[in-house]
Image (cartoon, rainbow, N blue to C red; front, side, top):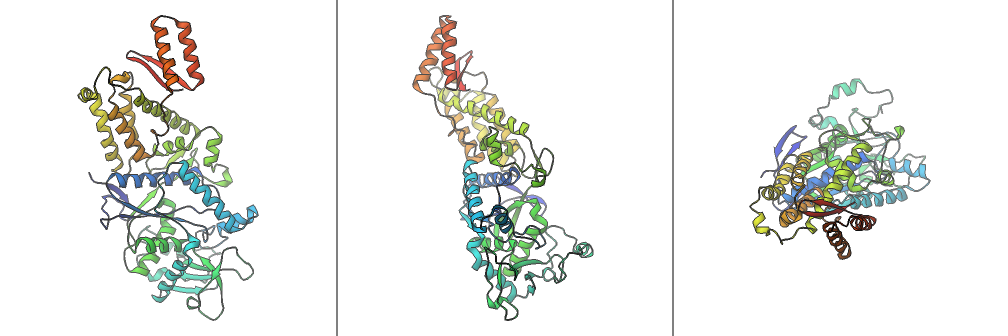
Length: 485
């Protein structure tokens, strides 16, 4: 089996092979922690969690870095405007450090609620200031930088392949430069590596600019540009060339283009072999925007009675490279699908060998398909993370169990399939489907005896007692099946 991924760098789906045998070097663009993440933000992290799980299923060891942008992300991509952390601090009446801590903790809690595998390295931009300054120093020594009034910039004209990754038309950018364009910049595409703090403002987050990076004798406080941190973190932890870099498609023309330029200019080596980008998730067909009031958070969906795992399954119903659409109707469908799957998972508590031995069940065609479904899921995800195909395989496998008596289900095959689903899709079906108590099982037996005796009143009374405990019962030809009501 070969893992294939769509590579933005080559615009094609290619077989994946890591540079080294010991681990896949993976970098994920993390959040800017100035506010709660919305459903569009979280979708990306769900997809990249499935990427990690798929790599592991293909017998790769993963060494993953994810940044926490707690400084330097300006409100616009052209290095103008206010730092998002400073803006958040001003709005909430707190320091930028307090804002960063609060929303970092919220993000880490969200990852746990969505059952994501933690990266081996989750690192903050403010903890890598020295490494970022060292990268600026290397670029200066190689004559890729220049200084203007508000900072130290990367000269994109000195990196000939700058436009290649995103297919940019740099001539059109120059012709269409706005009046407000910083006329000290040599080229419209040049970007800030290190911004100087305004003389009239004391920022919460600022550092001394090393004298050897400055032109002139004037000491300047400053802070890193947004693009700088990702290159510094990735290269200092994983090395000059990594296997996979992930992020959103909105990062392609600016953020990731700038990462490639500064990284490869500094190292002289290719920065990343594979680039994976997730598409946008809209809300009711509209781009997510705070001004439109459609920035729905995990807290919002929980307030409406949905769980983070309902949302996780909703995300998996679309492939990462396709545009998604969030509605509460779509989330309701995912919730119902997950509820049905959990009730299938509960069947493992009701299988037994009193009628048909597990070994004999192996000859059953339905059982063979059940066992084969685990491998089919791995194969679907190995085809460019095709999560919709994986879910369809699960629906088909579970559908074949409908109407079957519990005794005829191959328990090991079902458990193996559930383990595969949890390992690859992170839905925690096994962990969220406990067995019922012995007392509840006794009530089911008593109800069956009442039905055998045609004592319908007692049967109904016992059914109602079970219902109070959240347990439903269904009478099939092969016996009674219980489920989570």
